[in-house]
Image (cartoon, rainbow, N blue to C red; front, side, top):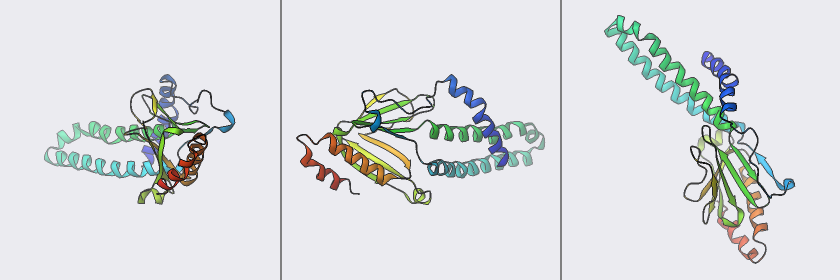
Length: 223
């Protein structure tokens, strides 16, 4: 385990850092044109979200590596010569995917940004392809907090934003943030605060002519 950790840290801060610069992975939060800079709040998922992702990484690593080890041992017992020849391949299959997956987890965490402005919110994700999704507050129909039992152990939760017509997206590829008119702010440690902030900004955006609907949205978002 320590060998994998040291190797992955070295790759993450060395080789992979070069790749992120080459791929032009953004290091700063998304920019919202026309927004009041004093009203912008930018944040990433909580550190507990990174530990949450690593938990499932280590579980998957142990299961897959044990299966590969069993297969290699069985081949070695059946034919020691073939087992010896397959040793470098077995080690590569056991170690290299673990390092790549470990780095990918960190990149997923580091490239995720949530931005709340006075008019809209933007979600950015992606490793190879960056996707940014903007949701205007007047399109929001419901805001809820979602937390599973494992998330509770890491003191994190997700904020789910449901919209009437969906958000507007920029970019294509992995890391979609709106599916079925849902925006997802995952792995944050102040979910209730963020939910209330989004609701407050929604009320401000609908205060002219639609202010009477604000209590209805607040009640609908109480779950």
